[in-house]
Picture 1: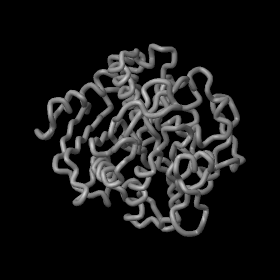
Picture 2: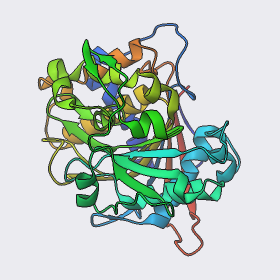
Picture 3: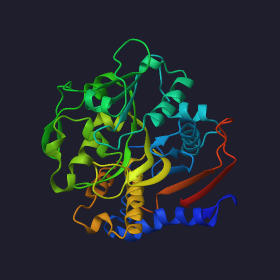
Length: 355
């Protein structure tokens, strides 16, 4: 069922909201209605919030003020809280003054997590009382972070930013039958995790979104690419440090790649931040976004070109979230005519798709 809750949204925006779910359902029949009664491992199961503004990007740059506006509108809608402060506090219910929050970004290839999106997240974490030095922006390698424009900081002041490099925990996790170790940043340093991936297709796994972002959290991810990365992506995300510490996913969908990824420059603008706490629902919805763009470009859906995103269904089977259309709710927020001086939208349209 589709419900328009405010009349400010245009017909074109309404159609866009419908197509991002409806078209994906038509294009990925093997992933439909995977409904099993189970206890899920995440909060807000099936809920995905897409906050969009044409003002988010200017060329390939992202406006931090607009990113912050979209981020806070989305997190309030995700959590059901009345203010951004209440919303951010609610995703860290057991936060103490000594806790460390890790922000896992993606800097492996040309299209990386934009620093402006990360800056907006950091601003809100500091605003709820988390000391700057208790925030760590991280990925696999220092060199990747530097190439993507991030400044390394291992010091005792300011927001920290560094790579795992070769510093992995000695604990062994079985990932698709293989013995793997995870980053000490994840296992030993961080108490809480925010996952900040990007919007890209992938030549093997079909897409690289929130769950595959953790290939940057494990040693030797190159051996985890067989069978379209299945069950490896799902098993990795089912490890306790990832499953139990992840509080929020903020997918940087300012721009995206619909074909030939994960490397290469951006191919389309989506001008959105996509939030959720359910990695299965979020990845499933973002797969549909990419397939929608592929259709516009005259390309077949990813499932039909020999690289289906099998891992999404496997992850659903592990109870990491839902891809069942009966359990999913996608909320689209369209922000128009952003006044960057007041940091408030002049128009906020909302569409609900699903329950």
